Image 1 (cartoon, rainbow over the protein chains, first blue to last red):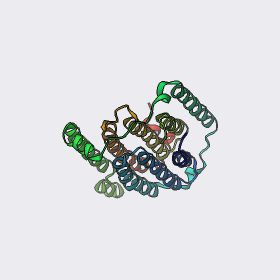
Image 2: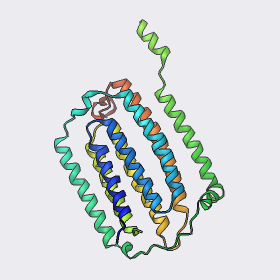
Image 3: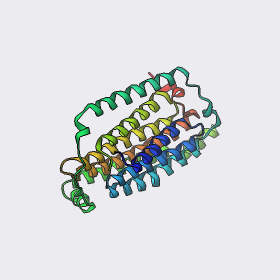
Image 4: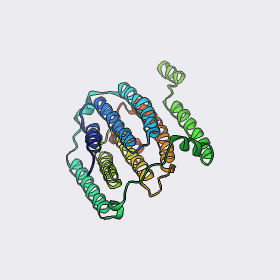
Length: 170
Length: 102
């Protein structure tokens, strides 16, 4: 028997994922995406991975969604709202259902249904321990990747003021 | 508590929604939303398996933390690209980025 909390979280997550892609006004789409990511964090809590859930909320809702909303405010235009999709939309829905039914059938007929939920022995101290011992080179590589990504983003989005002034004068 | 197969099916549904978004939408920001949904489906799978293996272990959760960090970096670069494209084309519809096509 599936527990009610799981069903509630599933409805929230999947529903807001669809709303995020389909709502006409893109800024409400971003908020729906935030709710969907919060739903994923709730799944992590149900799976007793509270540290990952906290990280998910801090990184996604705290940073990514705020960044997305600011970008939408910078580039927003009315013209986007009336993009006709027509034939591509039907194709997309067909591909979506093929993926959904195909993968669903594979998972239901696989041995996964026979798995029992074991007693959990995981604590977040183990995560910290693994991160600072076995995964420490990965952690350093991750830090460099993040730094490179942030610097890259800044360089890309930088406004070249000097060039603009010259262009205006000539 | 829900069994692992439920989590895996939810994850498959989210993956399908993400693929739908990537194929149908032409708005750059919406495509980024679809990518986020797919990444989260993958993360959900990792944590679900980490909890439900016969001997639960912490590797899946650690990997998820790294995956979330990578996704955040990807979004930062993606949004910078959107700003640059908007400055060049005054548009974020990927169909309008004509000079990028071969």
